[in-house]
Length: 302
Ligand SMILES: [Zn+2]
Image (cartoon, rainbow, N blue to C red; front, side, top):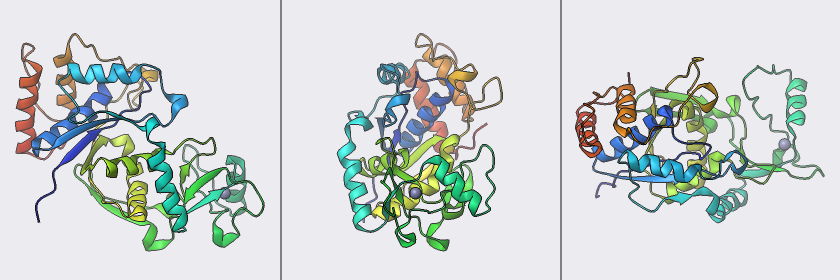
């Protein structure tokens, strides 16, 4: 058996320019691929069109280029890949793994209250399975969204090893429930688009911000349902804003300054436990130094 080539990716949502937080994930994904002699791809995750900012995709690509980070294959936009997502959904429907759901948010809350389940603040309530086929399905109501039937017990219990966070596990049936694949507004859900694209692009290693770690169990369940391979996962440390929450435009994140790419790269490198380099260092040289550092030790973050 010949070893599979390593393929990593950076998959930003074009909701604004890159900032110090998103550059950490971009740099880490690039280093992780290069340290293993692999390829690195860029994918623009613009399925949630109402949240996308026109032109932000081009700004992000220019920022990455200024930092010496170039996709090894043509950049893909998720908004142009609906046919792939539909084909995956059709397969799940044929297998009885996806079903139509007629519930509004209020319907879900009412069902949870009827079951005596507390609605915790700041936490998305698990879907109670109201529209599951074995419970009678839509019962004359109009389908709004499509959900994955996650099953119960061991089938819905996912364990995986994160290369930085260690062993992780989630009982998806209890903590999330049957999750949405295609939304009531007709948009593709993030989970389905990511899983389909990672497989279509041959991604073997997912490196992304820790705020996305919570999605991993759902994505692994979806990979299993679709018969797709599971990549390795590494979730990078978050950069916190002034209010102690994940850096975002709302709490003071500045767009990266393209005139000083090494300054921005040095900050990202420090978050990843790599040594910052003198200001005069050319970007290409800095990246090579960090690849060598990355190869020497498993990334642990700051
Ligand atoms: Zn429902």
